Length: 182
Image 1 (cartoon, rainbow, N blue to C red):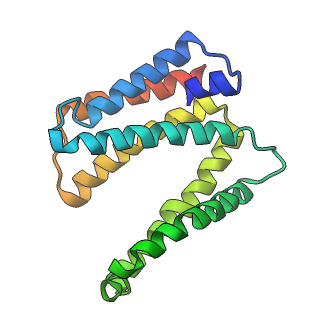
Image 2: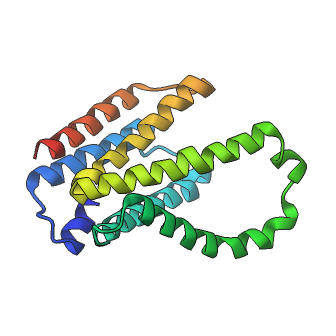
């Protein structure tokens, strides 16, 4: 987001901002286990990289939305655009849904949680944060996602955390601290 913000929003690109982004990026790589991934994970790593870049671009472009629109309005419009764009794809694979499983309380509740809490509320809060901070500042908070995901994987699923995770966390916190101090 820092690079997109410098390019599209003409936000000043300082040495401190570049150090912050570099620190946080290396931190995410370390926290995720480093660059050591197996061949069958390559598509996933590439997909996540593209997703992060497009998310960053979208977030910077949202800074161009006039201030008269609230975070809730922006999120609602984005949701409607996604609904229109994704409904045809859903209808194509509709026949393969296992509705008996999807309508159970456990799965249905999970879907509602993901849709309402993890998506709708989170998007409104993210969009509000974008309105309050520079794009380059708010973008570094995106680096906390892998940390939360790894911690939840450890807490809920019993996944292992390695020493590189601790060093990665430290670098992410340094990067965020640098940009907020600037």
